[in-house]
Length: 610
Image 1 (cartoon, rainbow, N blue to C red):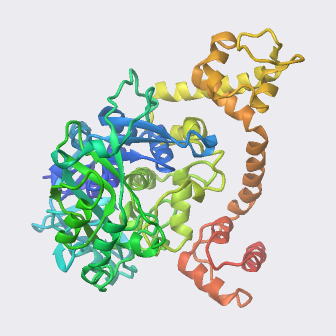
Image 2 (cartoon, one colour; image 1 turned 60 degrees about the vertical axis):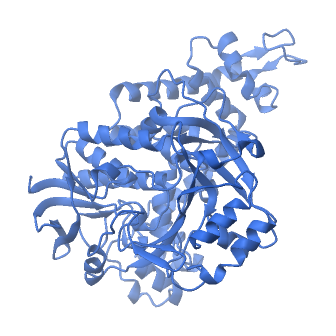
């Protein structure tokens, strides 16, 4: 075993996989330390990738050179573009995964990656000296030196599973937790908190009465996540929909006195947006039913995931509750639902590079920062590795702004907002979401992808072609006239431009392929699609760019790292407290911290000018 690396990644989940691959592909000798090689990239909860805002993250990871999009394209069993009845800003891709194939795909990519070693062990402690990371100590006492470390421990830091009155030390069901790192970092001045998440029961396919369920199929002509995917023709395995009812709620309600959520045994805060089923019936007591999606965990799977029935109630109550639901009257449990409580480090302790403020060379990514979800974790893992590599090469970190990427929104939120519950990415969190569409990630992140250096030259060239063509087509749409006699069979009236017809919604999404066929045969369909969106939403896009310009003036004003907020008596007490706690890097970031008033920002601007 080697005893020295450039970068060590601790944890083999979705953050760890992207971090290790990015580090190694950028030429650094990298070690991925994980408790179990067979668990690398495991989908421990829902068997899916993408969804609202999460799908945007995956597209951005792909453009920047990450692996998640390629993995799901190769292993997905159903693909769907969500929110098609709404505007482009909130369209989002989602895919059901064959979770077994997905982890095998990622494990194979890891195994074949140059510069990357996998070490199967537990990290007992970190070697820290005067606020600088030096290395790690493994379970057997082996010391491994490194210049940087990325911690991606997920739910394993002092993880504890709850099922009714039963408590089991575990990072996931059947896997031991990681003990030691939390206490060491706490002793080194870090603040540690507890969060909670949960997972539903898995039931046997043979026990499901599908005749009583509503079928949920994927798109007939699905679109891939990755721009590099070719010949995309995935399977379309259906999911199914059913609902809880008043009898279900009565059964669950009768056992709240046995729920660790309500008996005080769980100290960690759970996700407000994705509560357990027992929490739903209490918080939304006026609702007579809740949706449950039944999802196969792999192609031909006998094990099905009950999406929406996350629970930490006792086993007997989970079984009775499930069997009160239409189609699940004979449900047979394969795996019981449970809650898991784990340590995290409130994210005001990291910079936007994801390096910790207290220890140079130490980076946090994923659930350790208080986030939830495979996609959020993968995005952080990728960016942490990119910036760790750049630090070793004496380069400035890559910081994606809020108008450039959902990754930028995610990381900025982590650095400027209190994380009192697991953070999940939503489109509503992005104020410039019309600029951050799922379909234009390759255009808005082209320069960042070039700077990072993970994306292939061929793909970068393709992205640039689309950008240049779409700009040219926008001009052509203004110049090209259309009359009543036209190949699109549209009633026009007097002669007008194609652009005018698009703005009037006479030419819509369904006409994009016809625009290529009859007007722009020498251009890529992707380029025509981008030009259509730029024309259709021109006024809204221009308005958002003006807002970006106004905010950019604040983002450009840097705050020195050691700025003495304590000495500014004209700051509000709450404002001073929050500024000392978060240590924002820019005035723009300071303005987004809850508790910082406009008056506080004006005071800062005056003192910075001095």
